[in-house]
Length: 72
Image (cartoon, rainbow, N blue to C red; front, top):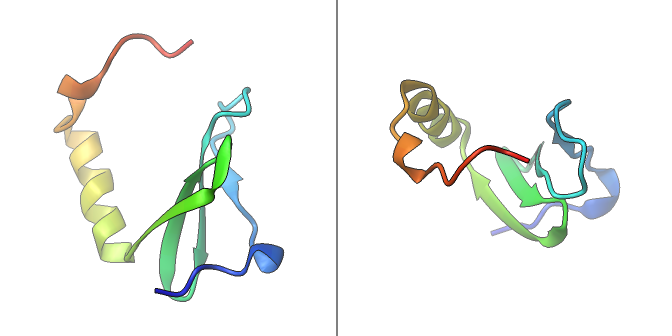
C-alpha cells in the first residue's frame, strides 16, 4: 500500500486538541490516513466508506464500552 508523501500533506486535528497527543487525519491516494501526532510515523489508512461506517458506529455509541474515563 502506498504511504502518503509527507511533504505535500496537510494533517488536521480537532480544534479541541490542546496537547501534542492528538488523532490527526488527511487524505491521499484515494484513502483517509490517521496518525497520532506523538508518533507520526505510524499511519493507518481506510477508504471513505470504511470511515463513514466507523464514524456512524461512534455516533451510535457502539464503542462506548471502551471509554476509560474523562479526557484530561
